[in-house]
Image (cartoon, each protein chain N blue to C red):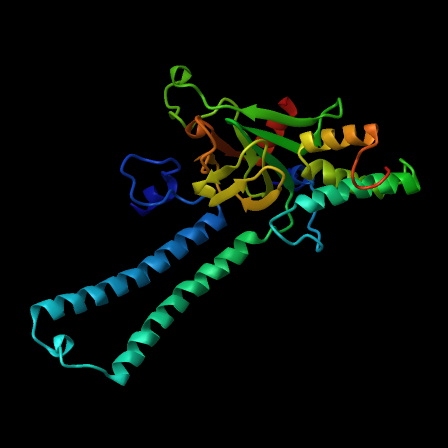
Length: 246
Length: 83
């Protein structure tokens, strides 16, 4: 079983019907987000159980908790002030740590510009310049439903995917061309608003090959739901081959 | 893989700039654009360090922004200064 788990990994990189949990992570940042989610959930569960128990015991039993002539108690007040403070601190520290870690752009090896437009994404690989001195750029439209091939995902697959190398620090520069859009890829832990006239950077290092899907996450007009983004992570030699074809 | 490092060397982009430590890099794009033309004006097109500004704004600024500014420069109404 262990061997099978090691060699036959199936990752959940797409939204699933009735999916109750997050997609599998493909970057350290997304991994951190899952970790924080689970940590916070743990404290939330502890509090829910405590409050639930108190409520239940007050309704069910005639005990100290439900003693209605108890008008004040210093120790009790001290505890019910300190306890939430401790809980909030326990939640705040990992969350702030992650927040500042995600802001860091550490020595990137390539830059990709993602420009949100009504209603498609435009990508520019300006580190690379072709023979005519032009930068590599393309528009990426959603695959219309009638043109979907078997296995492609409705409202998620696009005609030209963003091909990126794995195990490489990549800097994404996100901006908008007309209205505010949002560049979102759950598997990579991305959600960056694409604001016109503003360049936002975010970096990632994708840890495995695969296709990672995302959808525009800022209401941007009638076809807001029809401008997904698909990131295809491949090995470095394959990426360079793809680049040469452009 | 021996040639992995060789392939990796093909990837190169602009680094970090302590003046712009934030997620918002808008001003960095404009600054490098202005710096490039200021550099070229002072030192000439062939001065190698100017290329650094060029590659930074090239990688950072959206093509449409650069086109707009180029047009403004050619018309003489680029807001920074006389470039």
